[in-house]
Length: 402
Ligand code: GLA
Image (tube, rainbow, N blue to C red):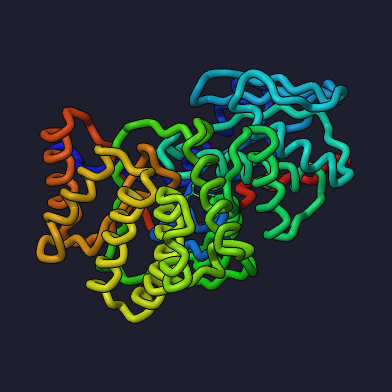
């Protein structure tokens, strides 16, 4: 039987392979290697830019960058092995958005360091990634945070975790044109092995919640429908939430109770009301889900995950038929078949579901999901399992540039 799900290539192996690619390309080994993970959000979707709670974990999928100083002082050559493409960035001129587009995330981070007063040296860089692209698993945040981690080492300028996450978020806003919240960058910086991170996006305080039960596994299923968050649907949702908060006379939807929202229903545009109903309910579900994990109350966690999915599908309208089918399949397998809960994860419009399942029944569950998804959509899903992983790290730390 072929494997029902992919295994994750260990970070050390990705880094070792990248080091070889670097040496082949640039004729010497790299001086620094930095890595940052993607993430999966267990629950708390589209709540971060509403000052709410989110509950993500870092995954065992990484963007890895290897670098050394270049002979030319003001030139950065950044090679992406996955796309077999190289971006040339000129540090002598103000850094502008440009081609290739993927390098805009890097340009934004470079500018972030320049604004801190860091003088950047010329660099030669090679990059590899095992985070699926456009799958809602934060390949962008992994790229930004890996770049920032590399630049910390290169410049010797260490950033506080919160400042580092905010610098990366700013890069995405300004250089990629995506008005994201703070979840992805925070978890890519702060993830801890065997822990979920309950993040209060208003106070920016974090609470680590252990997920160590060896009988449980986190299964990620990719619809392989690409999502495009810069396409406008995300920004529109964000604007609708702001409109709802203004309509309620509140600084953000975090301050709105379900009762207050219901009382104001007739004064709000019906679509805006439904968007707000998702957010207010989702913030509550996220807090309850963290409690359920702490108490090992799996039936409660399952209910919350399915309710989150239904709300994202019906009120927030960021799901798609393929995601709905994956969640239906998981829900049909149910607790009796070893599935605790399942929902879409990330920004939506395609991408992945996250499911909590019994580890002992993984192969059987993955096989059923794969076969049923193929039967109903004609598409091939990708599946993998992950433990909560560590946030950004230096895999190899050379001395900072003089
Ligand atoms: C994207 C954004 C995050 C968050 C999620 C939805 O991943 O980058 O900030 O808003 O969508 O929860």
